[in-house]
Length: 460
Image 1 (cartoon, rainbow, N blue to C red):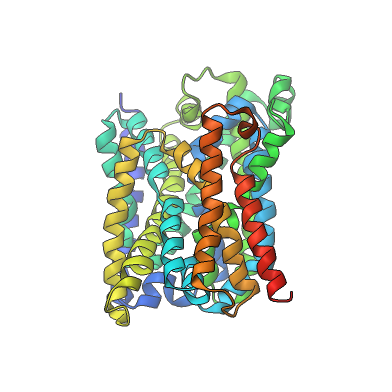
Image 2: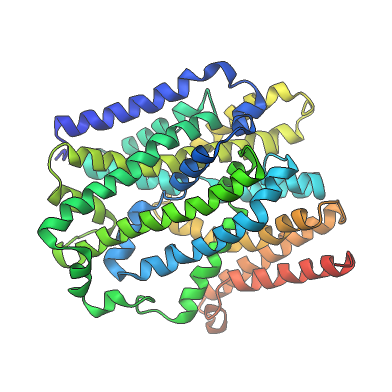
């Protein structure tokens, strides 16, 4: 049964039409490569904060699920570690990225190492940037609201999340993120406001929670916490962070923008986790993934319900459009354009990126439909891919001159990846020793050896 009243549906419809309008109204400058990819490197402080904050929250349904199941553990594994790594990124990485003048992470590999390692890094980044898990998340949400088939909901999720970036590229992503930033905070302020009066203030609610939901580790070991903590190092190789740092007006805008974003993330995490905690004692939810929508159905009146669901959809779509564009950039520019015979012709870049957008949409839609566990799959892929890319990428900032061969870089990328995948395989065939250590750690250890060798060889 459709849960949306006509007023609720009108709010959602207006939001979707606004996204399309924003995307098409900037068509006149979208054929300039620097405008299309980085908005002409004119990203202001306010826009930087809004687009970075919204892009990072595509897994909003998972936050509700984890909070309903494990309580405050959510903050300790999904929030706090990311604040730490984002802080170091702001201080040490973002300003350097802005100053290099390069466009993408694979550019660093092309520029510092060579063509083969550049293509290899781009291929791996495709796995990190596919919006498939978020398309699946949005598709399942639309199915939950409208009772439509999963196939139809996935197609709608893909279409409405990329159609408005076709003409304007990064500018459309940034401008729609400004709207989505407002909806993101407004939706959860509304929800917590309607929960406060009937269910008591947050302090009272926390006092009534069973003790197990107040355990920072959620009943898991300290090692479990540190696994999640170090997986947050994903931040250093996150193409969304990179793109925004490269597009900022100045290195200072990039640095201050990330530091400010951390504050907004902390505020938003407080809102979402409080809402999830309210649900623990008050709702009996069959599928914890729908914790937030179920709260909204039970406690929000007509109009406010539509506004909240629009906010949830906006949060997910802000991640889908950003990852779709980055994935298209990686496929179109960093692979096909770079290896094409006419790669010197910059006029073809936008064409290749739009081609990449189509390919990315097809791949993501297929993954979301064929592999319903794609979120877990991609998280596993991330934990084995990250160790192979982080240190080689950071080395391009620490040692800006090309000091190693392309073949060395390929081995540096490939060997940690191979070790992590092998470790994962051995752990899955029930070899106890390998099950005790996550694949992330041996991969990072091998990569660190390569980095230390390079550091010693360069006399640093």
